[in-house]
Image: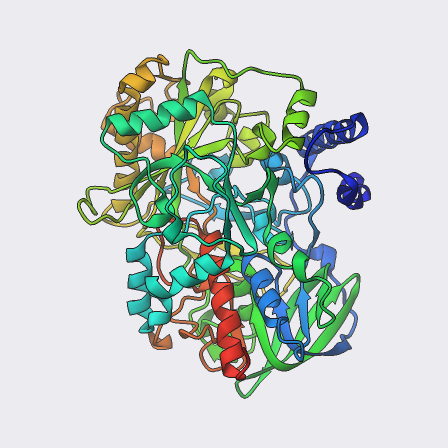
Amino acid sequence: MYLKVFAILFLLVPLYGDQNDSTVNYYVNLISNTTQNALTYQWPTNAYEYYSNEKPKKYGRYDFVVIGAGAGGSVAASRLSEIESWNVLVLEAGDYGDNATDVPGLYSPIGYTDYNWAYNGTPQTTCCLGARNHICLYPRGKGVGGTTLINGLVYARGFKSDFDQWGKFANDKRWGYDSVLHYFKKSENFVHNDKQAPYDPSYHGIGGYLRVEYHQPNSPQLNAFLKANEELGFDIADYNANKLGASQTQINTISGRRLDGAKAFLRPVRQRKNLKILTHSYVTKILTDKGVAREVEFSHKGKNYFIEVEKEVVLAAGAIGSSQILMWSGIGPRKHLEDLKIDVVANLEVGTVLRDSSLFYGITVHTNYTEPVRPLRDYVEDYLNDVGPFAIANNNAGIGFYESSYTKGTGTPDIELEFVAANATNSLSAKSFGLTEETYEDLWKNVNIPQSFIVYIVSLHDVSKGTIRLKSKNPYEYPVIDSNLLSDSANKDIKILYEGVQLVLKLLKTNAFRAMNATLQGRPLRACRKHEYLSEGYWYCAIRQVSSSLYHQLGTCPMGTDPKKGAVVDSELKVFGFRNLRIADASVLPLPLAGHPNAVTVMVGEQLGDLVKLTYNEK
């Protein structure tokens, strides 16, 4: 409630120039309270806050109903409402973002608010073994902006080869690189605010809704990371221009403030009379008849409603949410639905494949550089002047893309390094990954935070596949998420992470890092004590202990040409068997990408807008 009371005041807070004491005091209190509240916040375990047993009443009739206001839904609603004769309704379970979500540096505490669905996975045997009950956590954004309200803000599209393969897989050039590049540039407003950072203008757009910029100032540790890459022969390159190498991270902020999807695509058009955004609206079912989506049922502030649909339903609830809603609606694997006594409307492999990127976060490095620890008030003043640690999420200052032994010489990366500069770990670190006390003690308890950086290692094209299934036919129960990371029989995924470990160790031996006396921090994991410390066996053990999802869930409703081979949507984003039901989120991605899904989901939303306009002969 504290955050919401002050949400409107943001309009009165100056974004540039000198800041008065009241503004600084406000943000000091906001940041302090948000961080303190996070320490005691309890994540929900279901969605019963939306429960109502009332008989649904008619809410109205709309041309288009967009379910979910995340990265894809915000774009879809924005583009569809460009046609003045169409009326568009957006249903979103959460609320609008506020001043706290706007602060990128509150990345961890915001995960402990009502902006997070906070799903849990099932106990694992191949990953997350250092977490309590071996459970991987699945934070997902709930609010107008979706996961862009709580994500790490990295703007990384993926590489040309990813999209060319997608286009072939879908048998449609619309999803090949030449086509998707047009949509990436259409959305983007790239601001080259760090002239030392790499930038290839031919691959970027200017004037779109989605701003992309660099954080400032650079950490000396980040500069060492970039120099270390150069010493090993890697380029400092614009990775969104299909180039391998390292770079400062491109992020979705606007002068240091989080630019969530709704702020980017819905706020500029909210005055349109044909666009309505209904918050606190939890969708439970899409009613269909003979291949036509007729109605959408939802709960709203203790009452149940249904909306009649004139033209189309656009499902954009995310890789987890969209698959749930389809299965509640009788669209999913026949046996699974029949086991739950849900009437089967269409037998499609919804949720049968869950793709993700596996992450190893077990490398912390101590240096002789000490990041100054200043009073919170100083950091707030920096933030209000568009710079400093509160203007970046998780201090994720650098990024690199590299070939593995599987892709050597192809120009396609399999390994991503995320460089997290000093002062990123905090009292929420153990809670954020769900770590056991023993794992946290071994990993971070004795780390000198102002002097240490972390390197996240990511496997970009994971072979392992998980599943999403319903717990019951009750739409207020959370789903059953089995990540199944690092489970492929050939061990390719864990081998790639191990190659990433070896790459980091090579970087630490460069002159750039030796000048900082960079040494591994933390103590050997007790769970891996039967292995010689730093041996291959030790690292394989450590990876399984302190691995997790990178929270890049996708592919639960994959695009393809044949539903008998697992496809759920066609290349026009239509659910097979339905003429007016489309999906516009990361669930449609048929293949893993060498990037982060947010940028790609925006592109999917852009494509949907044009596909629908083409269907109805509108421009």
